[in-house]
Image 1 (spheres, rainbow, N blue to C red):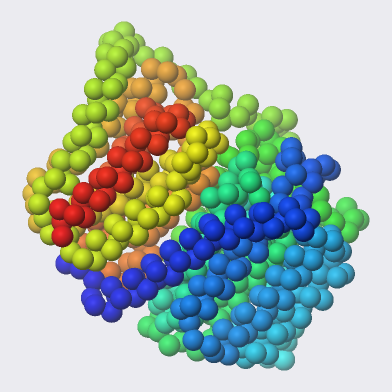
Image 2 (cartoon, rainbow, N blue to C red; image 1 turned 90 degrees about the vertical axis):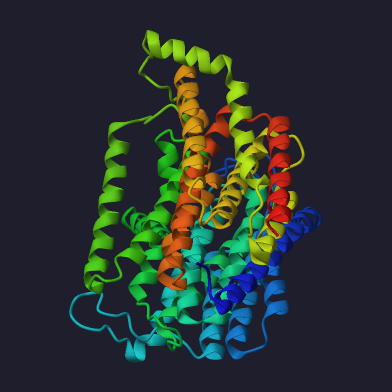
Length: 563
């Protein structure tokens, strides 16, 4: 059971790129925030903008510099890398100028076109074949290739630019797209874009530490255009370039992964044209605005769109055996149904709900259930200590984990120490909860490797996880409130990554079946334990901080005893 030597080396390199870019983004975001106040890269509230205070717009600069720094350290110079860097630099400076001086679309479009032309000329790649998306045979572009490449890439750039309307929205959507493109690039053996996408994913997670609601800073147009270009470039290179790897992917696969921001942009621009207004004039008709107009909270709106991005990404991978035209028309049908459903909701309701914070359980417990709830509630601390003491027991039992997992523990420990919001602020608790889940998942993954051949470990963890799950259900039932179980957008991002990872690894990395099972089991065991944490610790900063220290000690203990 295990990975072959070259897979281990590849994963170590990707892990190093990820952590270097993440740590760089954390440091550079803080520096960029300070610089932005001095040079005037500030977004002031008013009009369509709902943030109550002035916020800097330098996050995009930090994301781009973190990626450039990582690539500069890890990659050798090549024409492909030069094409990416040159075009990205043009868009970055254009975005910074827009963030500072509020450029109009007639100034931004020429810069975007110039960046795409630079990318095509230096990289020698463009859209040549869209595949059989219409059901009439392969759609080869011939002389139209350069023109449609410019149209498509500029469209994706502006799609992400227009989607940057809520805290954490554009960065999270781009991060999810990266998550699905990374195994895509690995299977194609496109090493440059594999490292670009991995570095971009790490940089986005570093930036999101400060961009989740309420955001400390925004990415600005420099960030959203940089993200749109990076993903558009990756999509073209991975579907139109020479196939060096063992798998070939079609343009429709990349289109489905990026379809949500693209469709939303097309819908909004078409709606503006029908109403006789400028298609590039900002309004509040994007998907996120419409969901919020139904009374859905900021966090739940972002979480829902993250969920849609994950859904489309999984569909892109799972429907690949279908004919291309079936995939394309199914994609159109899905979005027609989705937006028709939203339109019907807008017609029926002025206020769909009263916020997720007001959701209660309507079913009242009977007398016997009430006694059980009262008994478990009065002994909540006892159950909490019992479960988490039991969770530590496997760490104290000697077993061989190997040097590879020791490196993994080291990286995870460093990440948790750097990323955790040690200052006591309640609005940082979503970050704390994400790290707790990540810690629990990591420890369980190490346990599964450590006790791979043990017959007692599976039933033991099932029992422990079951106790946590039953206690959580009774706790929430007793308080009648579901708020504690509702995941925030950052939690959705990590939970989604944990769900899709086994599937993506199976398709592209061709990992051992046992490792895939361990990933799935670790995720399933993690959920009740994580929900128990949320129900017991809630949003109390001091309690969350004590638990993260417990997780750090447990990770170190697991590595030390396992070596």
